[in-house]
Amino acid sequence: MRGTYFYISCFLFLIAPVVFAQQTDTNLNTNTNAFSTRLDQQKKVDTVGDLKYREDQFYLGITYNLLSNVPSAVNIRGLSGGIHFGFLRDMPINKRRNIAIAVGGGLSFDVYGNTLFIGETPQEETIFTILNDDDYIYDTNRFTTAVIEAPFELRWRTSTPTKYGFWRVYAGFRLGYAYWYQAKFKQEGNEVTQTDIPEFNRTRLAATLSLGYNKVNFYAYYSINPFFDGATTSNTAETVDFRTIKLGILFYIL
Image 1 (cartoon, rainbow, N blue to C red):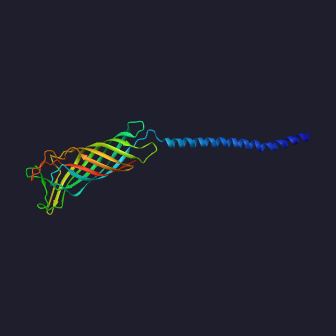
Image 2 (cartoon, helix red, strand yellow):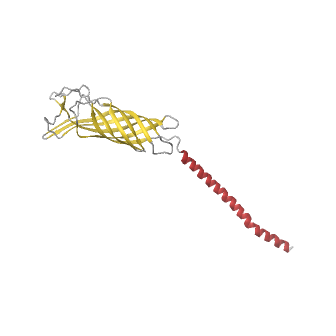
Image 3 (cartoon, rainbow, N blue to C red):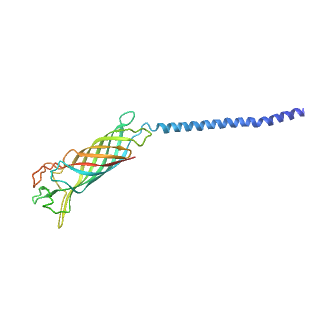
């Protein structure tokens, strides 16, 4: 009998490690499979991305400002440029979400260094005079505006939920209101500043186009309505249909 107990004990002692090893392998396989499943799910999420993504973006632009529809003798002189910034809300209109419309708000600060003097007569009537270098010696003559804008864009791009660098073409228009403006002329011993010009049209309307890759884009802006209504030059009797074309770089951020 003692021999029987001895053999049974030896048998149990020998098979116990095998059973324990099998159980450990089972638990390890189960944990490994669970970990692999979580990895696969994460990879799937990373691959698919956010199917409801938007290109909501802040923008910052720097432009060189040209003059358009001005008398032939009116030219750019001195600093002529602008800085523009704001935010646009992206609203995709197709399933792929690469076509969208966007609306937003922003500010624009522009300086137009030119040869068109804007002053005032003793009767407080605005005068527009072309400054010829042969007749006038001066240091500064510029027109400056600060405009609050509401941009609207129709957007096309090559973006996907997981692709953050893509080509874009955005066309639209901007409706703005000039809440501040100033015409300034300086020469030795004389300075003229005008902040009340009845002919100035505070409402600004323009067509815009931006195209490029990733954050850096070419930007163009064309003023649809003139800056001044019913204005003519005092020395040449020409219509002052002052408009602007802005060319520069626009950065889309986020």
